[in-house]
Image (cartoon, rainbow, N blue to C red; front, side):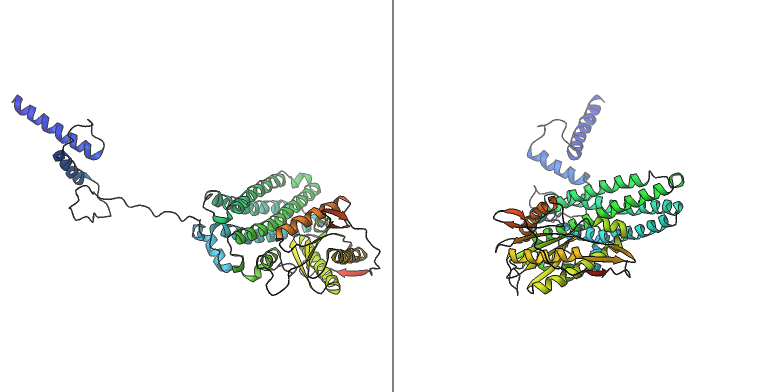
Length: 442
């Protein structure tokens, strides 16, 4: 009887050991390591192993090859368009030819959604101006609630865009630095919008009345200003990403043009420089026209009317340039700034043309629905070297502009002998002119 019990115990121990060997690690390392026991162990593994969807295709001759795990497909080296959310993919496809990479897709989508956000803000601003005019604080209170919804939706998209880029750092390809910079821009603007949103919702329209309504309109002007800054920065990021990915020539040509003025925009100018000005000669001089303190025009007339005022500015400036310099191109480079590229023209000659434009605006008056206003311009001129990039041109022009700004604006300056210098303006007999700003679209 004792022998039988001992035999049963030994069998239980052996079976238990091989079951442990199969499911985990052997309880006694080094024990039973002979060839026979190894084959028996493998047999036990096959007996107790969980079923798998992948069958072992070995012919049974290689005893050392068991069922192999399936390796997951590795991610592509560069994050692609397919890694965007499906809704974003559909939106970009509906808009035209979708980009190839995630970096380009994120910037393109935020560009489209930023336009929608700005349109919502302009509509809200018009409602706010109307509510203030009729002293309706309850309407302004409702508008504040609507504005929160608009801001929350836009901020969510900004945050999602930043996360999509940040999570794929190292897989963003040649546009890595531009994409990460764009993500930081999204984070920064999201924080600024959140701060303004908190200010709006601290207002009490029922007790503070007119004061709260005026503060509300002021906060909306801040939001619209941020939207304009972000629009220009997104255009710059869009151009940088496509240029670094060598896909700038694949852009739909409609994106080359500014929708407000119809002039060539930043992307279009980038394409010209990237393409080497095929079919035309390279410009020899550049003039940057900056409309002074244009934000006050938006505050006074409203942002929609401000767009129409910029359209009138562009039309008048292009008319003056065409009369003085046939081989030139007028573009809207950003916000209230216009870039003139001139061929076969020296910086001195273009400075004289710029001074004519500046004094012509100084003598002109603008009118919108019975409201009169005057606009002044700051002019910056440089010569363009044969190998200068657009970034070089813009950077040098901005350096010259700062000198004119420090002198009080409504001045001309140019780059000369390695530094920016103010231009001594000659007296030009500019004719007075009244320019009516179109109010139909405002």
